[in-house]
Structure formats: C-alpha cells, structure tokens
Image (cartoon, rainbow, N blue to C red; front, side, top):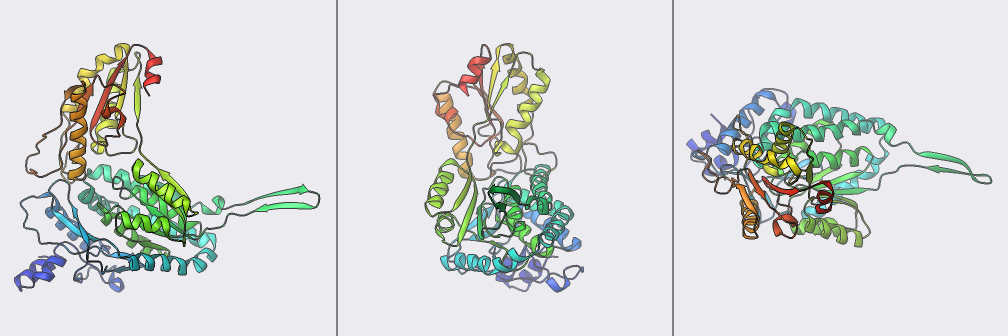
Length: 475
C-alpha cells in the first residue's frame, strides 16, 4: 500500500493528503529500489527509478481516471529554483484537474513577487559560469537529457495525459516533437559558428560571433505541455543563456518532471528555473529588467500583450499566436484519403493543436465526401486519455468546453448547418468530463463569428466552392 494509505490508518490526515499520489525519491539513493520518502505539503516529481516510478504513475492513473476513486487531496506543486524544488509561500493557488474526471491532481501556487525575483536572481547568478562553459560541455548535457527523455517517455506520457487529457499515444508524440529539438541542440558546436569577412575596407577584417544574451524566459501554453517547453529552454541554455520558464498553470506537472530530468542530466544550479502563475507572472517576465528575451506561445490576446509590453521594455520577443488553418479539397482528390486526413487533422487531441484543421473548403464534386466524413467522425471513440482505445479526449477545461459550445451555437444561430453535433456528449463512467464530440458544420460564411474565431476544439467547418479561385479568396 502507498505511504498515504499507511498515514491514513495512523490518523495522519495531512500526511495522507500530501503523499497519496506523489513521492520524492532521495537523490542519494535515486537509482535503488528504496522506499520513497514522503514530502509534506509538496508535490515532488523526482520519479526516477523504474519500480517506484511505475507504482506512482499507477496510483496517478487510478485517481485521475476513475471518478469513483476515493482520492485524498494531493499537495502543492513546488517551484523549481536553483535546481531545487521550493515550496511557495504564496497563499493563493489553483487546482490542477484531470479533464476526464475533474479529480484534483495537485495545487499550483501563484508565485509571489519575491519568489519570481529569486528565480531570476538564480538565473543571473548562474549565467557567468554557464556562458563560459565550453560549447562541447553544454552539448553533453543535452545528449544526456535526450537519453533521459527517451528512457522515461512512458511515465512522462502518462503524467502528461493525466493533466492535459490527450491520449497517451498523442502525449508520446508531444514528447517526441520536443525531443527532436533537444537532439538538434546537441549540434550546437556547428550552430554557434560565427563568420568572417576579409577586407571589408582597406586593412579591415570583419569577425562576427554568436554570444548568449543572458537570462531568457518562456511562457508556454497548455496544449503541448512537453513539446513547447522543450522547444524553448534547450536551445536557449545550450547556447549559453539561462532560463526562467512559466508553464501553463493548467499543466505544470510535465514541466516539473522535465526539470528533474535536466537536473539528472547535469544542468548546473540556476540555469533552468520554473515559476508558476497567471497574469502577474506574465507581466513580471515582460517587465523584469534582467530578462533579455521572451519566447511565447498562446492566444492572440495574450501574445499581443506580451509582444507589446516586452518590446516596450527593450526585450527581444518571439510571439507565436493563434492560427486559422484551412484545407482546400480539389475535385480530383482521393475521397478516402481526404476523409482519413481530415478526421485526424480536425479531431485529434480534440482539436487543441495550433495546426489543427478547423476549416475545409470543398471545391465542386469534392463536397460529395461530406457524408462519409460525418460517418467516420461520428464513429470516433471519446474517452479519457489513459483509457485504451480512446481517440477523442476531453477538452482541457470547463471554460474551453463552454467556449466551444458557445461558438457552435453561434454558427447555427447565424445560419450554418450542424451536420454532426458533438455537444452534450456523454462518456460512460466520466459524467463530469469536459466532453465535446466531433462536430461538423457546413454552410459556414466568412462573416460569421464561428468563422472568425479560432475555435480550438473538435469542430470542423465546411464551406463549398464552385472552383479553386473562391477557395483562395475565402482564406
């Protein structure tokens, strides 16, 4: 039985709450099958060691996917500052919910101003030594990190699925796309090469060098808890910068697991730091005079805010915002290939992908594939991400579910035709999940709110065109 069960039998409710799901393995005995050490008040994601990791993630699966499970309240998720998990002193926190069952997986603190400053201070203190570290030694850390990610992909995917909702297979794809960037970071010796030009002017040669900026920051969204953080910090740190990461407050556990892997890979103290929070944390990153560059992925509104506020403070800002992704199907397209491709592109991960296809323009006879598309989409299986056979997971939050349903209703109200309605979807055993089934809406016009907004859900809008030119115009 788990430590939490033993604590409950002893009547220690606080210990039970803090330890039912999460354990910390003593670092000095991390590779032995030793008994895990309970950490009061804190979530600890140092889940290395095959036997203990498997046991812990099995417990996580039981609580996060079974609505009837008698789950104790898990503890708070720590910050990650100076290579240590740090319990926040904040009096404010938010629950991290399993999207399928609404079980609480942990509580994420809203970091205080002092704690955010401490993270930046740790990054500043680490910068001189880390930037002076040889390129080859920085690359070796990335080589170790990619090996550790491969070794722990299954555990990481299950954790990611539990907090985000996506299927385990999709979670593995999330991790793999991030792993590709870690692998790319291993080639830093060639990436860091500068340039020379002789005789730019008489007796003048020009030499250019690639040098690190200092402290950089990343603001990551909820929809790719592993991939996007791994797009951000590995390239920043391997080139000699230090980093402060703010993962989405909805999915902080995956980032904390990755932080533990970086520690095991040998990343020095202070090179990577993680803070948790919402608007205040974003504004802190934009305003801090010690942060030199920001990488952001998220919504149009938030990205525009980060771009303008960060740029106004003299920072380099890379902002990746919302997208309206169209597919144009021409008359000579293979109908079966069209249906298969659109089903995966529109409804995979419940449409919560930056590059999900949310609109399809059917040119001429291509409109004949719409009934088959409806049939195949209606056959997709909704289910919790950790359940075998699930194809369409829940949306990540109740707010997302309500927004998607509101946009579907607005389209119908404005004259669109709902060929397949995924609202009011029911999944046996998961009455409280954020379910919206595959939805196909035709006769959508560019002036509709539904067309103008990025739905970010399992909704495919179909528009007919008589020949390719109008299809291009409607984009």
